Length: 366
Image 1 (tube, rainbow, N blue to C red):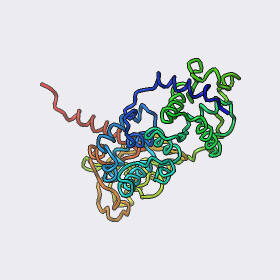
Image 2: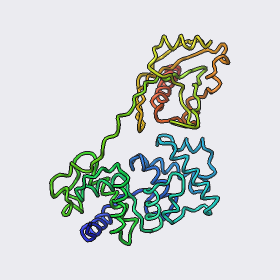
Image 3: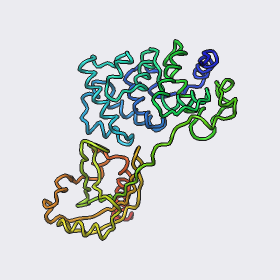
Image 4: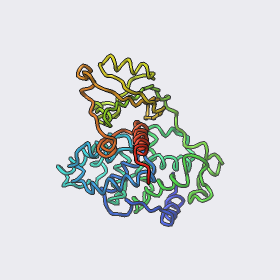
């Protein structure tokens, strides 16, 4: 049993003195709370800030989010990854407009019925935006709670998360939003996940069991997942007349509905690329290596080799894949198309090459 005087009071006192300024904080705006919490699920605060500002400047409320075309939404989300989060935002916004007068419900259980809103996000909205008593347990909170109690339970188990939620409800003060944010903030800046935690400045240090036992590094306990599957891919960036080929992925599966540079399974050589394209009646004028890149998904790693292939089409209709490919300028690719982070290295390579060519073609100053 956690003692409220030992835990809650020093934590809130510390938070009142040390809480950080955030663009979405203290705005009395449930929409801002919702958007920021979804962004922060897989993104550090420092990285999410610029995305949040750009997103909310263009989509300042639930009505605008419900109406935005999906392509534009995904472009605004580009770089944050886990694109289903953005799609669920729009789905929920449409439901809110239709059923809830374009407002987020205050009730925790009602929030849980909306797409993309799980226990953590529902708790954050209910407590931070509306002042209702509800736990919001993320990785930071779990780490603080496990260390404070020197608890060796596996935090990847849902039963452990529910136990922590119950513990927090039992000591939840009349400032539930500040309380939840205080524990999260403590986990982010003091009881940190990587490196030695800053126990000497922790407001809970005197009563933390892990610190008392000098075993802080043992907690939290998390059973390692199976190693990620490694997939080798060769990214083929077809180029013609200053434009580059992109295609849209299927609406289901990994990176569903996003644009990509076409790719082949395995690591293919320049010669194999040339032969493969020639078999499809595509003449290869020049092949340039763009180097290697790696992208890590939650369960898969892509190990990629990229090539810029300048081509000339003789009978592209004979290649079924060409019906899916559209050619766009690098500027259009930058401004209008949602390209996953996995391909960003190669988009940047194209921009570098274009810049070099532009500088070479510029007349010498007199």
